[in-house]
Length: 357
Image (tube, rainbow, N blue to C red; front, side, top):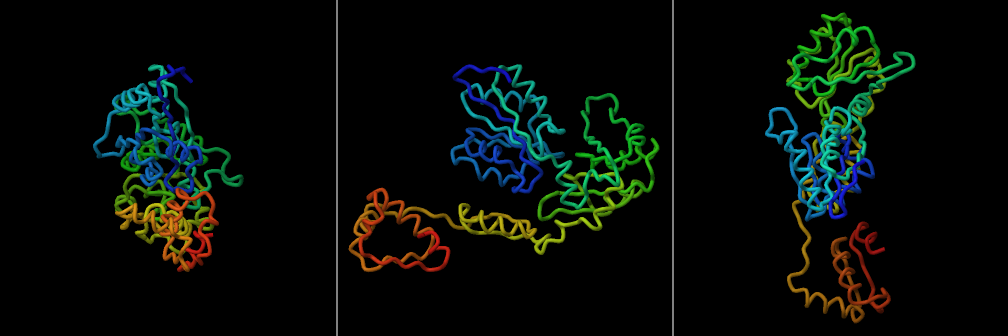
């Protein structure tokens, strides 16, 4: 890692995983919570931005086919500029930054610019997405090796560097990222170089999320099936006999709420618990807070009411939010909960009672 001047910040190249928030690493979440600046890609789950500080600068870099995007040179320059200004910068990517994520190029630019940086690996979609479709990329009775390749090569190359002859000879499992838009051309090349017509193929779109979609076919017909089904990016393609195992191992798409889109309207702070439970049942959860908790308009009057709490017969809490607001003010005025005196406390509902406890 390069050395930086003491007044400079640091840049963290962070893998945000394949989409499911439960697959984000603890280190990634910690860095997002502390970051001054977050530069994120389209393939990173935007719900992760909810972990950012309210004053963090959040910059969208694009990186999805057909959408407006910053060029790689612009991204490199931005990371260097923000780091040199003394900021802690998180460069948030989907999957793993070093697996077809151009993280290596960004790390090179940071090193050349004398910027201190750290690599935070993430769970790559090349492994996680097949797993969520019930497809293990290796299996001792099926294959002993797996090959990853990209279908979205550098357009400046004069010719493809994908060795289709080698793919045909290697066999095993082959996983293609970022190639669904070129699926017809890639499968034609694979067939022309000797890959089996009946080679099982699975395409998994929006993998690990509640609206994941999977189609299965053969090398000969998968492009036609994808086109007929309007199957677009982002998607992962898995080639190999391990695709047959999906019939018995398809666990995620059998969850009771799989394919259901559910909107949670609680405050963002309170939505996480319910959202996690719904996701565990397979739902596609959208957090859309429709209420916001704000302090009383007359803080002095509220403080006087709290200060006189010991003089009341009963204090009745009707929501967890009321508990939070009351005791936040109470402990600004008093150091000991016993200062509440002889007042009895009532709580409406189990969640409110739990918050009081």
